[in-house]
Length: 204
Image (cartoon, rainbow, N blue to C red; front, side):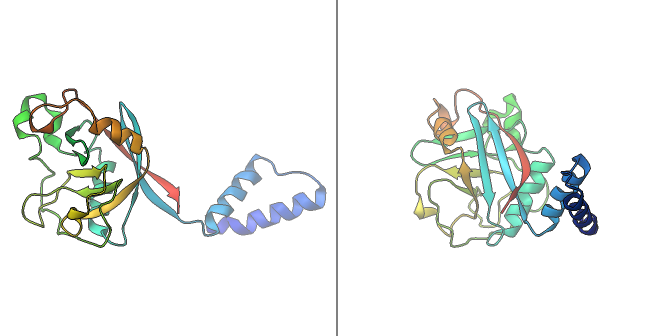
């Protein structure tokens, strides 16, 4: 869009000389100039559930590969139709397992992930306070794939044991509703809580 800056400047000059306001085309160019003028954008994730939306801001400065992985999976539609399959009041909600799309695989919930190599741990100094989004894994540090959890209560015992890669900046009331859902064996909610995850660009 940078090549349009000169055009916009001329349009503004002519408008001022003639006493006529900007038309639709000039306004569009002015908006593009504003965007080209250095306003930096960053990706956020929007997780939609039947209880509402949660918006996540990422931490690429401390967990770049985890952020990249989550964004790529979300853009591919990987998370859509998965559920929050583990909810523990006073602790966290966990989701992102592709096995949870299949009602007949309940015994395998919590075991699934994307094909291919697992993520290398990016443990960092971000504390696992309420609202932090972190990557679930098995006992091996480098075993994360797609499953993630959202902390609903400060859980500092997780610090530097799991990779924190984002934070909920809107919609923690939704997480509270999810974590308090009636649950059965293995902390699985009695009713499906499906998610749809989209990536949007927001100003920094």
